[in-house]
Image 1 (cartoon, rainbow, N blue to C red):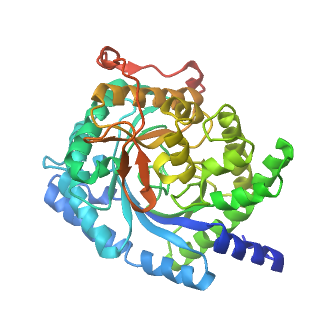
Image 2: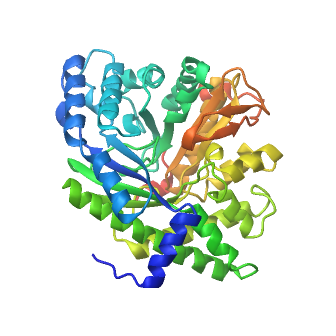
Length: 454
């Protein structure tokens, strides 16, 4: 598919890049590691390292060349691999060795992150799943670039409450092992319901079992572009707001499609999807919260926020689908608190809290993302938060996810400094009433009736 751009469109794109924070957030190369499986963990780890270095050796070079030649900022070059629990499932050794191999290979080829230290346990565990999940805290504490994820539920299978209960403890242990860095390891751990197989965004990216040998997926982000577009229709009806967002998303997605196809051609790797997600950064002018406020809300989190976010998310998806036949991943609006300066401001003011964020996740693309909570929060409370979010995903047949950071030694009002795109997070309060007896029941919450659609 080719696109003809007129002079006005070219100038608009230049202005969006130069003044409105438009960028390609990531080019993510997905790699299958299924052929690396074996019984000896040392041998498997060596095969993982060798394959990543071989297949991804040109990714950063190609990304930088496209960036220079097209003048489009490409913020991250990343890798996603087959859920490692599937690759190391037959090994008796410690899966952390595989994580170390992934980290070393990612450093060798120069990517920012590598996702896929993952397990899919939405219905039940295998022995390999159990070993990998138990290894997550050590793996994230001992690596720099590795990201982990666990899928604990789906609309088709229900919610694995045994896994939900375990993940509360895994989050706590990860925070403890990275306490010297404010629990940094937790920022690289996502717990999903209805995880998707072609997500290019970290920390939840993995190369799904339904994917091919390799694929190029691109994630595009443009909250600043949408914000500026809405400033030009102040006081207009919501019909006009939705149409403005949709047209803007179309332009942003078209740029992503161009980069994705060019990367695919130069790497000689099949083009997978463009993920148009309004992924914010801590930079002023690159905030989803400010978009919602531009619609007429005094502060993000006040009454009306969920409706505004629903409009935004839907219009983004409609615009993206118009621009590309391969829109995938998550594609919508992200609300990661630590990565959005408007969300941070609203949380500090007290208007935005976890309960309101949970309501907002019913209509946006992901879930409770990059939220710092007091370090002494019980594991069972963390698990209960995971269960609530998984229930939203299961019932609404959508992807939901949680990244919580129980910051060691910190309490409500303190700040967790994570740095880079992860930003900083104000520690938010959680309910003090116990969920322990609820979480200890275990078992599986059954799938909803509407899952029976065969």
